[in-house]
Length: 279
Image (cartoon, rainbow, N blue to C red; front, side, top):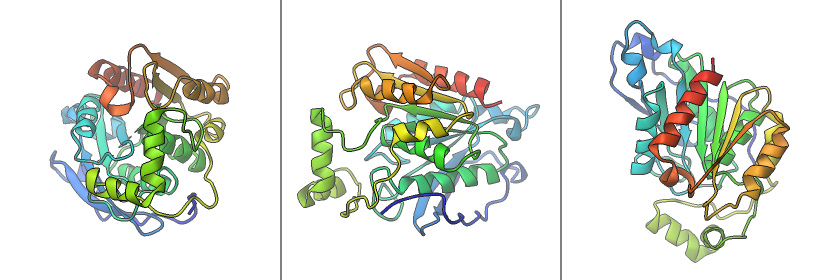
């Protein structure tokens, strides 16, 4: 159960957004290279309403949620609303989450989901694509940028692990129980609306820290809270060290984990950073 850039995503039948003559959101199901249907939503964002600046001049932010999130969760919608001030936004549900098909592989084949969504974002008329991932999604945006060279213009990874199989905190031990035990997967399915694959990774996918050196020269931002209850500060520091001076590291005082802990001020700074770097 391993992912990679092999194969091509089927093209969306939706016309480039600049040709639709509407500012309404678009919602569709995108096919991945391995045949999973991914629930995806495109919103043009406040910036593209200015007729003097067509949508192709603004970036599109592709938001990759954390484990047990989905496109309709309030914390994902809040992130999308904040980034919509800086460009268009695409949100989606990873496989096994929400209305998307398949089963979660907890960061492995999810890179194929992101690849499908990034390709769709470009097909809607945007020349610049910025991926913004949280927790599991933060690891996926790192691996996607490494495996699909040149397909994105900037990468933001928030609260991501540096290495696999980490069990050093109580929340991560609970997560491993949910993923590896039959009773845990039942809790995931019925308690968190997340369907989890029962098989182990084979082979083990490229880890986030191994992916980071392959991202350059694409601009990279690593964001992590000093109160993160899942992954302590050695994780972002490992990622920043692997970037060898290429990426930026923001250690946020008082911040916890992922979308729930990313306040509007942080999201605004991320938007400003992305607009400046993805030009």
